[in-house]
Image (cartoon, rainbow, N blue to C red; front, top):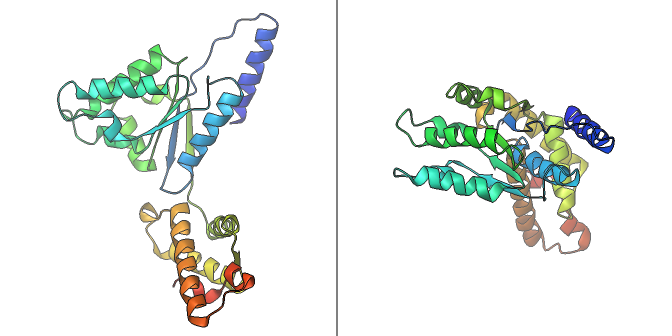
Length: 247
C-alpha cells in the first residue's frame, strides 16, 4: 500500500507543475483463506481510493461467479458487461474468482475471464478490479489465461491468524457488542484457538468467521446460564465467563 500512496502523491505533485501523468493499473489479487479479511480490506480500499480521488465515488460492487456467468450462450457476455458497467467509477471485487475457470474449455466462465481482461485494458480509467480467493486455487487460476498475471501489478497475501490474533479479534467483537470477557474466559478462548489451529486443516478454517461463530455461541450459552441462575443485573448481562465458552 505504501507504493500506491507514494505513486498517487507524486502524481498530484507532477500535475501541480504541469508534468505528464499517466494512470497506472491498480488492479489487485487477494490470496487468502476464508475469514482473513479480504472483503474488509477491499471495502476499506474503496473508501481510501475515493478519498484520494482515484475513484469517482466510494463504491464497491461485490460479486461472485453467479453474477458473471450465464447458463446459455450470450448470457455471460450480457451479465459481465452489466456488472462492469455497474462498477464504473468504483471498485469491482470478485470473490472466489478461481471458480470462473473451474468448468473447463466449454464452460462459460472462460468467456467472463476474457471479457474482464479486455475491459481491464480498455477501461482501466473507469474501475479497479480485485480478484480474491484461496491461495492455491488463485495460482492455478492465473495459469488459465496467459494475460492474467501481468494485468495484476499488486498481489497481496492474507495469512491465517495465529491464536493471539484470533483472541484479539474475539475481544474486539465482544467489546463492540457491549460484553466483557473475564480473564478466565480469555485464557480458555486462547487455549481453544491454540488447540483448533494445531488440529485443523487450515484450508477448512474460517479465521475471523470462526471467531464470530464462537462468540455468538458463547453469548447464547451465557443467555441460558443467566436464565437458569436468575441473574439479570447489568454486571451479569455484560460478563462472559469461562463456562460460557464452548468446548
